[in-house]
Length: 238
Ligand code: ADP
Ligand code: MG
Image (cartoon, rainbow, N blue to C red; front, side):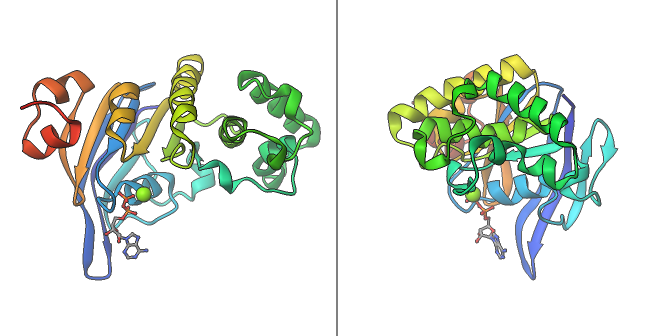
């Protein structure tokens, strides 16, 4: 659990600026949803927070400490990917423990953490199975398990549910919120789905063309959209 501060962060690819100085302050334990149309810069911003992409200007702070130059593994951040990023030839337990194994942690510590994460995610009966033997929802839980075993201070999600069917998506939203309640961890969740944003977020950051249009609670965005873009995106009547 940690506070996260994104301070006037920008990104340029060559002469093309795609993020124009975005600032978001996220207190400990908050669930923030980044929402906006395809191409507005959600993934780029998340990847800069994770350290997977260098920032062009600005600062990323975790618990007040600037982490701009830290590699991803030293940031205490874990990113949850879509479930198709699982290793098909590794079991559930191996998938979940792989990052720890790569970090050189010993087998019994890895076992303990994998079992603890499996318990949280109701995956204990499936630890010896392979991804192809699981349902879509179980696979997505394994993808979350890979993040949980690392015991990160901040979780990042980049459209984790977009390849699931509608019914499962609704169920997984609830599971992710429940996970956040149990772990009390700061989470940044990216989606282009306004319903997902409105139902999951403590606060929503609306991005458009690499700029913040508005930051606020779902209710604030619905009742007092800052402009017509936010209003039409969120789907409020004004
Ligand atoms: P989103 O996740 O909101 O769909 P992205 O962060 O993927 O948006 O992309 C934001 C913008 O940055 C887009 O215009 C995209 O084409 C551009 N972009 C992303 N990655 C690169 C890259 N490696 N090189 C050049 N342009 C990129
Ligand atoms: Mg994206």
